[in-house]
Amino acid sequence: MEDMKEMILEYVIEEYCDEENDDVTFDTPLISGGIVDSFSMVSLKRFLENKYKISIPDADATPEAFDTVNKIEVLVKKFQ
Amino acid sequence: MAYSNKIKEIYQNQLNGIKEAGLFKQERFIHSSQDAEIEVEFPAGSAPKKVINVCANNYLGLSSHPDVIKAAHEGLDTRGYGMSSVRFICGTQDIHRELENKVSEFLGTEDTILFPSCMDANAGVFEAILTSEDIMISDRLVHASIIDGMRLCSAQHDTFKHSDMAHLEKKLQLHADKRLKVVINDGVYSMDGDTAKLDEMVALCEKYDAILFVDESHSSGFIGKTGRGTHEKCGVMGKIDIITTTFGKALGGASGGCVSGRKEIVEMCRQKARPYLFSNTIAPVVVSGVLEVLNILSKSTERRDKLEVNTKFWREGLTKAGFVLKDGDTPIVPVMLFNAKLAQDFSKDLFDLGIYAIGFFFPVVPQGAARIRTQISAGHEMHHLEKALDAFIQVGKKYDILGKTKQEIIEMYGN
Ligand SMILES: Cc1ncc(COP(=O)(O)O)c(C=O)c1O
Image (cartoon, rainbow over all chains, first blue to last red; front, side, top):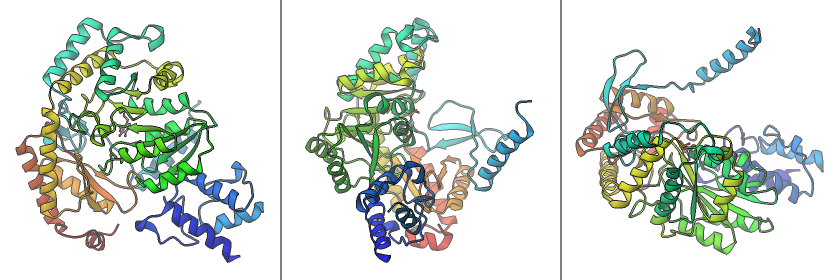
């Protein structure tokens, strides 16, 4: 489902990027690439939970699982 | 043997990893007191070399001021060396409370509590005043010690883009349902030298009923017309709920920090902040020194005025020479080189010319944003700055970066 990825990417760019780093794609490393820090990851998690009416347990909300838009989509689908 | 080869290897491997990543930090030994000119042993084992220091937080040149040293000596003679106790058992002298009162007066706050360092103040304050019903909303570039303090606190957290007031407002709306909201930022950002928009932040915090926290470590003593800090510069004295600051930079440079602000918040720290409760406070000799620093700064603005003149000369000189600087008007002046190796080579060449300034690169600053961070002091005389500027220009010519744009430098050296 391309829609979900597009939606997540749009949020990531709006929430975390500025002119200097807005060339984010589905595969850009967000956390290991320094675009999203661990505190900021919290708002991404909350966005996903609200948007897709899911609950992501803290144990699954790891920096690895949040590292790219592609991986985030996998994570969301797991809890849908 | 508890420290087996297996354990040893784990650490050796980690240390090697740090070395291979080019992130291994090494100290340079200084054989003199902290001043405009210092004697540095570098590389280790070589004879100390006299160099002009343009990378200390000694903004007001008070680190080795004769009156401060004299006051410290007197403090040592009259109040002794150590307290051998935390504050609330038998570790509080009259001069500790005197300093707290003087700091409140200087910053224009209701009350102040001393901490062993500003790192400790930032580590202790959030946990002391917030619960899991509350939210901390922090600028994405706040200092590492604030990040640690937020990690130690059970309150929820969120961030806003650096100095982006529209984004902050969105976050305040998003978290309208929380019991307490704290907006957290630095007054002056130590890596970029830019200043927080405290006037706009005060307005937002009033509108959304939020507490405002500012770390003034790189502002106290010299930002604002009489050096009270960013809140003075932004015209919001008396409106900051929590200020943390350090005595380890402009205010004498020894050590110590504090939380200053609303009476109830300071009292909560006295009851609950762990670095205050479980660690000795600032030694009497240092307290005596800081009292003299505040005395000097309350009598005259001469030093911060001189710093302003020096800073203007330095920024204008570098700009005219064709360096890429970060915008701002504070004495923190980052000379942008973008490439990590270039920053290191540049720093080494400066040292050969008698100028001490350090290269900063990832992960201390973002990838591709390597720089030499220069910091100007009221302790610098014009001849120091002229010599330093000459050296920067000479090394800038060597690498052919004068007059080049960011893109051009990156094309030449990579990022
Ligand atoms: C913004 C900021 N806050 C806090 C600190 C820590 O100060 P202290 O040396 O008093 O622990 C520093 C020092 O690097 C700093 O730059």
